[in-house]
Length: 335
Ligand SMILES: Nc1ncnc2c1ncn2[C@@H]1O[C@H](COP(=O)(O)OP(=O)(O)OP(=O)(O)O)[C@@H](O)[C@H]1O
Image (cartoon, rainbow, N blue to C red):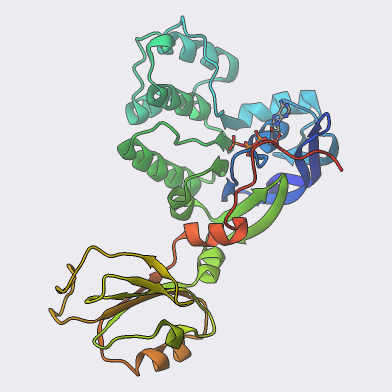
């Protein structure tokens, strides 16, 4: 059974489109990342999945329950954890008191362990909490009843890097125990680290649904080759080479494959810093999605001083889906 499934899920706020015709499912035990720019429809999806608002079209189930069935959703919530984007805590109560209140509503199987891990200041009133501390408390609350599925809206926003890492490790451990995750994020490195699959939403519709591995494969490789001779950028207009950049050690000019001057390097006639051989040369950088043998053949024509080939970051893949201009957060009107 899918932990979560949507079929043509649609939500309009009056004339404004929140989401349109979303169909996807999240398997049990999967970590699914939901990506999209501001106003794409992530929060709308999450709030509709939790039954906080009714869809205007399509359907969705969470842990097998129809999200529009109130009684079924109350039952589902015993097995469901939720980390909202904004907590909306009562600022006058202490963390401890709020936790006890939540425990009385939904049970508490593991707050002791979670408090040790995330360590929010429980004796302080929530009004005194920093954003990061609010988020830590939200994580304790989301997991204290040992849910099977956890839905999270930007779970790491406000957490310091150490706490973020602790959270990623926690998610991996929970996944190993069979917990399913569905969460929205802007942070591509975290998606790359912990997600099995990614859905990309833009203007309320799903534009991509893939494993992280496939997305990275499609993103190609970042190639940086330092060669001893000067290079004509046009020579690197190979099938599958994108954004070719040529940086000469001796000429303080970055040249793109279209011959355009794209910026000035801060190096005059010296060997560039980071040059491993001590010899002057030219660095060619590009993203490559073509045949590896063609690339190796081509590089073989040069005297290669240094070579670095690695996965293109998810950011590049993401940018290809979004293009140069991000849609505005103003939303779109029904046609
Ligand atoms: N309560 C509401 N009333 C009217 N329009 C809304 C409401 N909530 C969201 N919208 C609109 O629906 C669209 C999707 O918004 P949503 O908040 O779901 O995006 P998001 O992807 O979560 O964005 P962000 O990353 O900025 O949180 C936007 O155009 C937004 O203006």
